[in-house]
Image 1 (cartoon, helix red, strand yellow):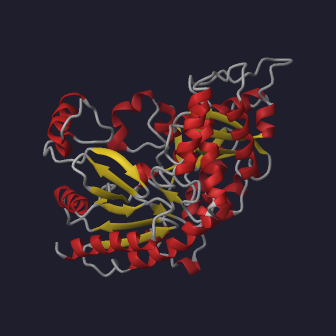
Image 2: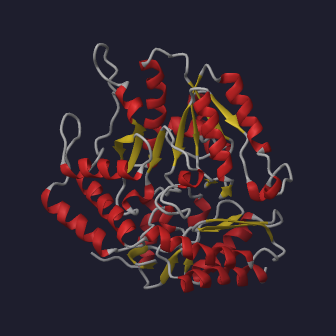
Length: 439
């Protein structure tokens, strides 16, 4: 039986627990109830159309309803819906693992599948720890991450991406993690101009690496942009230096590409800007273009080979029910084909130049304290003079203008589908500008 908007909202408020949502956000009972998507737009139960300016939580890089992806899903549904990968295989998982290996540099040849980014991170951390155990260096059991990092909401992922406002209640369950100072080029705490930068921000990381090299198993990092921290961007030179220093000290480098991968930064993967080869890469979100839950942990062959079960059993006893689900894998294969056939990365890099130019027009607005852009990410950090209610009002005014955004604290950002027409993107930024100028 079809339900009207008010009925759906009422039942929602009675039974649904929304992720990362305050109670007060739903008390107004006028939030959109989305029923379909097409291209870069979402449509609600009242027929209103919204530009999906955050790619439905950073994953729908190809927009909604792409015919190639829908066809792949339909074909796979008719033949094989689910099959475990424990001691079995199926063609979709095989082909996807090979396709991902082809996209990676060096010997990043092994893919372990899961259903969400946090699970990919959990696997990466466990692989790193067990690898050192496998080769007789079990003392290497510490992990290092950056301050303000976010890597997911399972416990080990929270430990390396600890944000007190989100995660304080779980602190007692978390393993010890070393935290280095976060780099942030647009708001450099050293006041250094990029043209004169000597990577002063790396000193904190270097100190940790020097003092803990014998016991550090891995460093995990979001490449070039810390998303949940407010789209804090930094130079590829930092990543280059980190890779060099980790290699020199026998420390594994885990790159979390879950939010930045698949064209978001102007390259297929953000680490490519630095010309490095990580030891482990975590993928998710746009792997299936956001159409189905799927993630992958890509591992260097040398690491994988340490998990042999002879003469001693070093099997990786880890997995998930839906690891490599055939429908999700078929969808991911179709998405990879679209990225290639339609030159999505190249197209998005060109549109990114327009986004950066439009965002720069916000810089002289009094309430804007900083502008930062990277590929198809544009962020405006607002003045501390604005309250939470002010930010909420801006968000709602954008919704009423047909543009769905979801701020990160005082950071208003655009992270739209990579296929977004320039005119649509330009209108969205100009709408935000008009709203900010009226406050």
